[in-house]
Length: 418
Image 1 (cartoon, rainbow, N blue to C red):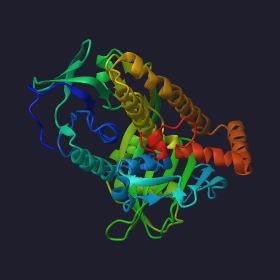
Image 2 (image 1 turned 90 degrees about the vertical axis):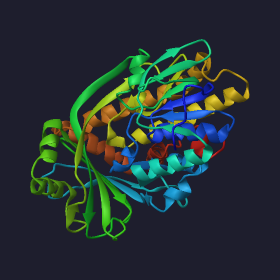
Image 3 (image 1 turned 45 degrees about the vertical axis):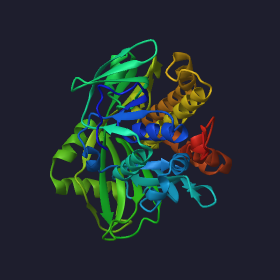
């Protein structure tokens, strides 16, 4: 999408900063529900940078319902791998046997898996094409340098000196959000001293849709099923948490050493394995914004919260933000209210803050509980996992939580129109 002139453009209704899946989904959600809204997306990354993202994400059932409502799931479905069941173990890397403590069936409804694995670039590409169909302007390679908030609009200053005015500015610019800092919104943040290693692995035998999470003393090691590639190679995505110094050494070191350490954790149940792409490592921490809104500004996705990947809920929390914000803004617009007014935006904040705080605390506690090798603590947590395994109703509750269908769920996440 080509950039239009900004100097003589009328005031936009919504300007989204950040063209990741959260920013694009926010723009598409609003434009689809209210075609009369003028919406644009501005992104600091160079054009095409999103195509180099080799990561994959777990899309919960609620998120796939929303994507279906937005008109993009049909394109993604053929590329998405359903997670048919999940196995959880608690062991050490050197243990010859990893006893299974907890298993989950993979459906929230007949024929509806609780999650799918989708490549980030496929998801981003599908959302971009839908945004283009809806007439949303995308300005790439242009950072926001600052903004000034007025009575009826916010004036956004771009890196090339141009300005844009909008009634509402949505900050979806990531965990290190510049817009959040510009607005003076403080965060609660701490580092875990861990980094997440991400790579794709090929293996001889099919995974049959099974996901596994092995809780190891340094952090969880998850294998997540992917669709075979165009050559028919069986694949899984790896999310491997290690202490930061060890993770950096593994990623920067010898490929043979990396594959040997990977095999110790992955095992040989799927036959011979090999790494298909360059492993990368990201430092892990917890970041929670003290406020999700300010006058004419709403935070969404990682700009509002960055959590540990132990429960695989980062993307799905971002989509919950999108669905809630879109519902609040669309209803306000239908009632003739000012969509950027603080009293309107506070409805969104009230809806999302408790759920976000709860998930942040949950992932923090789980990480601290399982990322250690303390004997009594290991015995207690294994007992707890075993009890959950024997309580079908409790297991069903956890599946509903993981699928994103629990609590006060926004309409889009239920697959309903706003």
